[in-house]
Image (cartoon, rainbow, N blue to C red; front, side, top):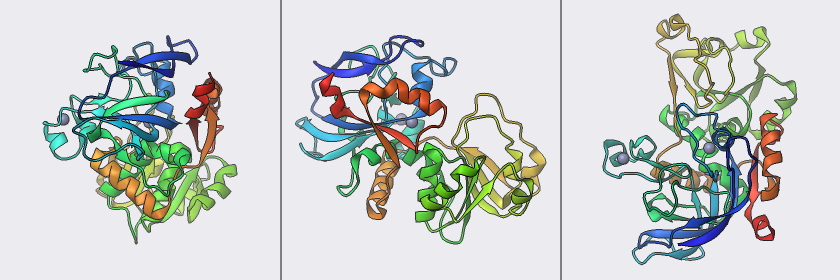
Length: 353
Ligand SMILES: [Zn+2]
Ligand SMILES: [Zn+2]
């Protein structure tokens, strides 16, 4: 066991502050990673403030962070896929049982015995729970370590590990590609990645936003069209025309307005998670055999596929790099959507603490 610098929250109401945490010595199948950047996901904030208490109660101290990129510092004797110096990443999961039907189909994100990067019981016993990427280093089994293509900017690559795969996976699943009309609802951390992927897949991309001010940015990110969702006439023009819509809005909103924009057999997938149930008008689904679904990150193999795709197409997130010391301020700004489009923590800043 060794000690690593990290930022942790001591309770649901205390700010994140510097501390040291225990990390295990690498086992034979482990990789020790020096963390260079960690993206700031909205889930980090929800978890730290225990806002998901009913489904995923926070355990303190809590070290969030599951958009991790860094360099391999050390590998265990049985590690075959990585060597010191390699550029690597870790996303939302650090282990699973590897034996269930989901794991066998490379869908570890649905494993009933999955281990999340932070807040899951630590089966190695190093600490009560796993600690995430707001830290100078992390030790992870090589099966849950991903290769980051050399050409990608690391600060911008970090958010690919959660925001990237969260949007890439459902678009692959529902066949987004050339000749398809794709809608993206909400232009934030997830939405801006969805626009980049949909465009790279060759689809016709339409962004729905509530703010006029995001129009220009949506076009710059790759959208062909931008629709102000409050404008009923503009919405009506697109009725029954979409093959796929990805909805990244976590606030209450009228989902039926989007279901009605789907073509026959069209699908609307939620990746934003509103706190309260949404009201779905079922007739909207029945008459055109439309479907309404959800999606959760992606498996390890698909996450690697996504990263390789990003390498080929030079896709990264648009980030604002911050020092670790600014994290509490960043959370407040994230609540006001005052970030384009993801914060990425420069972990070198932790050394000066
Ligand atoms: Zn996340
Ligand atoms: Zn499993």
